[in-house]
Image (cartoon, rainbow, N blue to C red; front, side, top):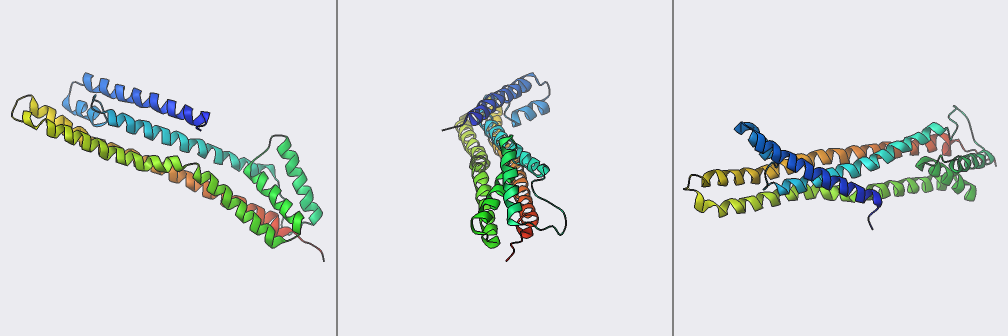
Length: 252
């Protein structure tokens, strides 16, 4: 079942794509020079540019989805500002102090300061309390971080699909308009026929160009998000290992 946020993104994408399409059509119809008219038509400024409109919708929806998750992961960096763990050099932590850290984190979460980092710290403290094993605590932390990262990456499966779908839509548009051009070949010898054939051929190749161009932009947003994701989880793991796990001292 689609979430309300995703339905909202779909609605925004549909409205924006239709508006862009009609603005381009209007621009092409009002253009006085052939160069400017050709520019608008290249981006879908004709009633034959319906495939362009679908591509615009897919592109906008993909960008909105990626930006939503990118906003989420950037917010998670605020967890580092809570000073959950001690950062002083040469400081060691006893089991009782580890338990106290967990209680402090739980108290912060009760007051609305709940982040991925607070959950990681809390679970690491719980794991150490359960078996007093630093090695197993590190293993559990690593598994938890990997699972959390995989979950967030999985939520953008729709973005990966759209990157490929946009390119496919471009080729579909090319085939459709090429087929339309072939159907107009019987008008090639007429004065009004050649402009129609030329316009249809132009639109066919323009569709692929726009699709590949927008696909590259969407791919950039997607990989930028993956970079932010890698940065956060790498920072979170190093923060907990350096300031919690490696500081624990269990007296014999």
